[in-house]
Image (cartoon, rainbow, N blue to C red; front, top):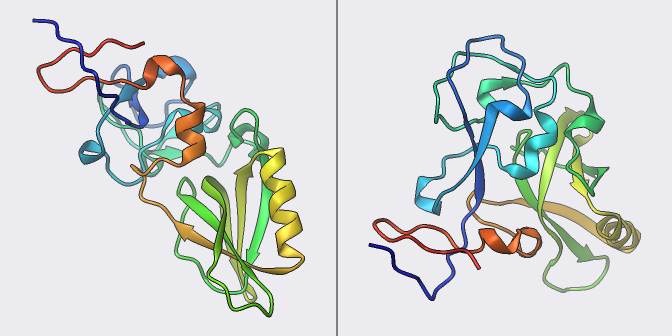
Length: 199
């Protein structure tokens, strides 16, 4: 029975394996498939379609089965250049924090701004930016994030007049920019037992 739903369901687009692959296999875009899943099906560290650039040249740390979610723990990106990890339309931007941030590559975070010498609540400058690389030094944490040119300009202006910080996001929590960037045909998904047509 085919039924049409009048309500759009916002879901992330996650990466799964097309076939069984052995440890040490070098991944290509032909090895993965994009699937739509509800937030209750999402586990930490699952790659999305925004991470496709990180797969070229990456190798598997373990054997994986067809249909299995592709997570950061399963792949080794040591041989992937940083430029290869940057999503299309983004730039690599370095954010330095004076504190230690318990994050890892592949996490998503909001960039917050607190004006200097002004008692105001932090403002969200960027939502759901991908963390490409992260390193810890004696002075704090250095994070390389994937930002658009417009986002970089906004953050650069803000950092001159205040303090930046990061807030980690749940992997199933999409930002406004991610929802806006999603192709229209993906804005409706399948409910259990009901086929939903894309517009």
